[in-house]
Every structure is written in structure tokens, then in C-alpha cells.
Image (tube, rainbow, N blue to C red; front, side, top):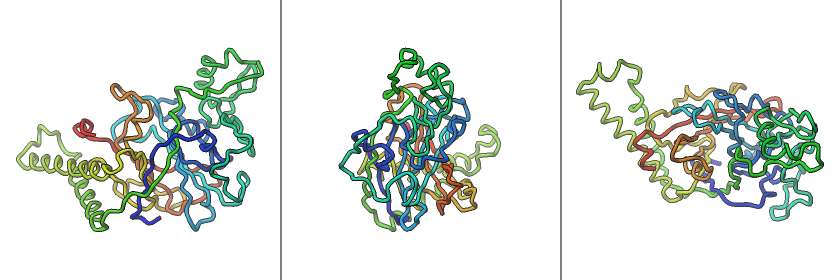
Length: 361
């Protein structure tokens, strides 16, 4: 994929079997369809660093890299906290992203891709143990979990929080019986949908370059001078002019955002590895120094962004306190390194709307 090409992601209903690991899906909600069956994030690694509760699976994007055998299969997994109070402005601490990749010949999947229109003979919609590696999964969220029920020892959890929830919803009635149910429609899970993609209609290259240049310049203007004395101490004619310039820059970026998404208003993901994000504001745009290098030493590059439209499908409260973002920009290792066959943490930049923009989107 060239840096100029943008692929848009949309939500679509799908049969459950299409959203399981053997189909290499891109999807939103439900339980993660893990790619590699080893080196999964630990329960601690999937906790919110703010409130300590387990993160909820948000989405995954299947994104192999052509010409790189180690990336023949490659998926990015996004998790987020469901506690509204953990979301602070322009801070991504309660959201995590992990990258997993496999060669075409691997221990978990056939060499040839699966049939697209033929369901497997024995689909397992509520997988609780990964079939090859034997890794146990939490019955509530589908993430790694070795904490067993102390009575029946037949179900496992990622931690005490999900064990308590399962006990209250179902397991109290079923413990030590033959039939044990997962919580298929758990309130802890986001509604499940397939992510289907189509290329964004190309704009004039010159216009794209000018927009990117303008956004960077306007972002620099909007963010300059933020560490000085208080507004009351420094309010001068010059400051008033700068404030007006800031408002103009922010409005221009936001109007550009709305214009760009207008042809496809239901897009929930924009994918453009090596490209540039579509920012919602001139404020809080990262510089190159803000994006940390991969532990392997390589630079991280932009790969995809999650759009605010996704929030509409997550059944979160839009009137009171709720999870929120303007956009989530995902940056990944430019060489897509192998990190000891582990799921590799990558970097998220969260940008929020300014207060006046939220009433317009």
C-alpha cells in the first residue's frame, strides 16, 4: 500500500464463524479472535493502568504486509477501558494496542487460506482454550486467564473481577454441573460486527499535500506558547490576535475533517500505513519526537486511526459520562519486527475534539 492510499473501514453484520481466528477477520467488539496462539498479552498487561479493571476488546485489523514473509499474517488488536472516569482529555493511558504476526507456514493455521463462503465443520463460537497451544481464555472476555473456579475447576478467568461477574450472571447456577455457559451477550463486551473495507476515492495529490502542510502549520500555531503565565497576566492585543488565529486554525482543521469524511460518513476506521492521520483539531497534533521508537530501535509510523463514528455503535452513553475520543491514531514499528514471538505493544495518540467542535460533529 502506498502512503497516499487510504482504505476505509465500515461495520457490517456477519455470521459468527466469519469472525473467528481461522478466517483472519477484521472486526469490532465481541471477544478477540487471536492470531498467534502463543505470547499473548498477560492479564496484567490487559488491565487499565488507571482503575485496574480489565480492558475491553475494542477492535482488530488484519493487516498483512506484502513481500514480508514474517508478516504474511498480521493483526493489530485494540483494547480500551469502559470506565468513563479513566478518559482524560488527549490522554491515551487507558487504551492499548498490540501487534501479532505469523509466517505463512506456522503451527496454528493451514498453509492455504480458508474458503470464504464455507463455514468450518466444527465451529467453536465460544472458544475457551486455544486449540493448538492450549492457552486458557477467560470465559467472560476471551483474554488469557488461568484463574480457575475453586469449586468446579472447569472454567477460567482473567481475574477476580470477571469471575465475580460470571458467578452472578450464570455460573452460580451451573457450577459443578455438566453444562457451563459463557456470557455471549455480556455487558462487558462491545457489540460484534465485521470490519469491511473499501478504498477511499482519491483526491488530487497536490490538494492532499497542501492539506497536510496546512494542518502541521496550524497545529504548530495552535500549540505555541502553552507554558507561559496565566491568561489574566498576559492578555494584550497581541494575545488576542493569537487567540483569534488559534480559533481560525482549529476551525480550518475541523472543517477539513468534516469535508473529507462527508462522502463516507459511516467510516469507523481509516487505514494508511506510512500515510498521515486525518486530525479533528489543530490542537494536540504530535511531532516526530512525540512518537516513541519501537524497542527494536526502528521508527514507528502511522498505520490506522479509529474514527469518532465508531462510538455510535458501541452502545455507550452519549448523554452522560462515557468513553470518548476525537480520533485514535495508531503508530506501529516501521519494520514490523518480531519481538520474541510475543504480542508487541504499539503506540496510540489520542486526540479529542475541542469543546465547541463536539456540538458540531
